[in-house]
Image (cartoon, rainbow, N blue to C red; front, side, top):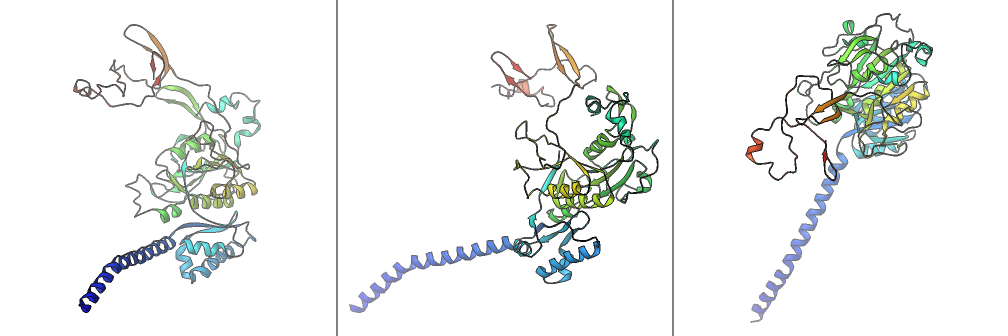
Length: 432
């Protein structure tokens, strides 16, 4: 009987202990899993930028060697530093971009002489009439355009998506020899042969992609992503910005017959150098800094930078925005930096590039429009704006997206390709 009671007691104890054992085991597992997750996060490799401030001397090879030595002191070997390093910044300032874990980046940040160690970030890319609107008409010889000799021999560097060199905006008619101070060059690449594409107008064209590739997930296929591994532009943004800044005079230009006239840049006799940093409309801050560094070395006078960081936006200079580092050292080298204000909001007055050493947009307006009259079936006329000059297609019904019977087959069967329209409700009308 006593043995039975003992067995019962033993069984009760086992039953009471079993949930506690399970709870303890689960706790241990969760603790270990948490440590594994933290370890994985700490060992995750990404691109970091190590900023060392102003360079101490002019020996470029020694500067790069010191970058490798610093990296090797943390990674354990010179070969590991070579494999890790993406760029060595050594012309306008000192620093480097490298593939590191968070713990390795923290170790470098604690070394003497290191100013900042920051993970790289992505940026994004942000008319012919505007120069006349600013009072820089080529038909008046009493304005700044003529006082500045139309930018003769000024070298404009452009950080953007590349360039289409065959554009007439980059013809070199009437230009003299390339300024002797120019140290840059045109880089060969896909569909871009320097001997055919560069001239006395387009005097430099290079591309920087290593920062983008180091952070790209998977294998980057340029063709599948409508890109070319060269300074050639595939989306037009860089070509547009370069021609707006320094495009040559081109007569009889229009947009489908509208706005016929002469197109030109703000400094039509300036030289242009393209530094392609945008890939799939994304720009690595590591590539931006390398472009700044090389442009400082090449001898540009002005840099056009129509790039901006994604949200969150910072109302003042922020150390996380690497564009400010490159632009600061460029200005210190005597280069004028012109940045886009951005047009992505979140408010109408949002400006993304606010460093006090760059020139950006405070406010803008245009004095040009393309008025178009629309006459309805009852002969009522409305004035609007349009750039369509094709054939009259007649009238089709316009459906408001929130109407209850929009899914009725009587309507959906006859729908044509949708077009975006902004509807504004008032008391008795809907305006588009």
